[in-house]
Length: 317
Length: 287
Image (tube, rainbow over all chains, first blue to last red; front, side, top):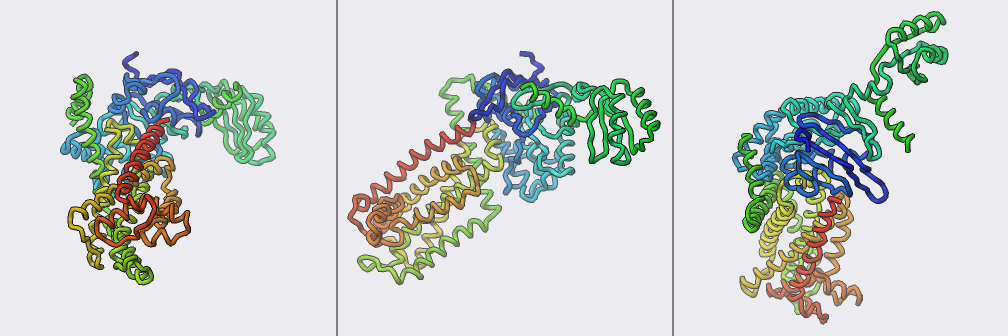
């Protein structure tokens, strides 16, 4: 296998009863990158991570982590991975430092070495002052950072982050994002699952979109965005009465049927030629006496990409 | 720092190439070390929340005082013995039974928080979680028995057959606790919800009272008396009464006549059953 692949998955299958959770899932993650696994609830993201982390046995297919087969060499895989699941996996009663020392001992570090590693990681994740405090008095962001620290004790080759910011407030989310960015600059390979598109956009260099256990799209965030028609024009009209008339104008210049959002009085459509479309839109709207609140060109959001990809996949069914 | 952690990884890989028996010895050593690490974690819980231990002990002491003095006057012990002398072996066994709830809560809380997943994704011995749990729970039970015995001595309970049989009686009580430990682990792995503790308590109380702990099974309706006499708890309690030289109910059934034998057979059978069921349930976590 290519040595620069940290994770290599071929045709992974897993069923729960009648429902396929993974239905021929393929994935390549290059070493030293952050790879985002994006999908709605129940798409199979967590199942994929649990198979890769040796917590779950697949029904078919093959998965290698850092070159080791997760089904045949689980012990070797466990020495090379870190896992941060959806629920903080730390002891609530113990302090942060005691937690890291305990996990260090379970990774078979010596007593003194486990202590040194704990202090280093606490310092690195900004928990140096909270090391003696019981974890139940930590904030959500602090808990996740401790969770991250605990999965880095052995310097894993691959780190799995399963929806690491679910349930965090914006501040906690920023704390975790900063910690993940710092890891990446150290060269750790990260496989990140998320249902937040901006999270994948912020952190991942490549994204795989998963729906119903199957890959529906993949590429860099920019590639995915340009795949649904490049730039878009947004027109927001001042009064509801003008909405239909404005939609007709946008339709004349757009590359596809415009989307209308009556609540926001917004009309949105993909365009081919940026400047020509904008000029034409302003001129025609003005000529027809339609009062415009705002008009702008923008790149599509990943939300739009995501909805488009999963809808297309549903239609193929 | 990195040198040492990388060295750990290298040693383990090198071990995999060594002779199988050395590998086995190495694995056994790690299994014990990992189990002890988990035990230490529980001991640290005690240190962090000493009031939990204190309340646990106070609860047991309260039960002794309540049953000893409130109900003691109303219940006549066959042969005219002292009710508190009669009561203590039953109270010991009841505390062993209540330990089931502590085991259940600890195992489900870990599974609920994802700690179990973390342990399972680590290169540690798979048995460590259970070995650590068992050791900590048994240590807790020893502590509880010591406190209960002290309380018993204060209210007039004595052992009359010498220290050897008394220690044997405590041994049988701990054997019962060990059997219930596996029942607790199995229930926790199958139910997987800390909230189901309420349901467990509904199971624990009848199991405790449907026995010979407080009243003689011979005063119960026939079928109920039979259930009470065959209750594993009754076997341990009868055997402990004999070994302590405390008054008991006697009883005509085979189970009551062979209490000491049953006090060994029952727990061993329960361990065999629930140990294998627990191993299966633990494996099924990865399906």
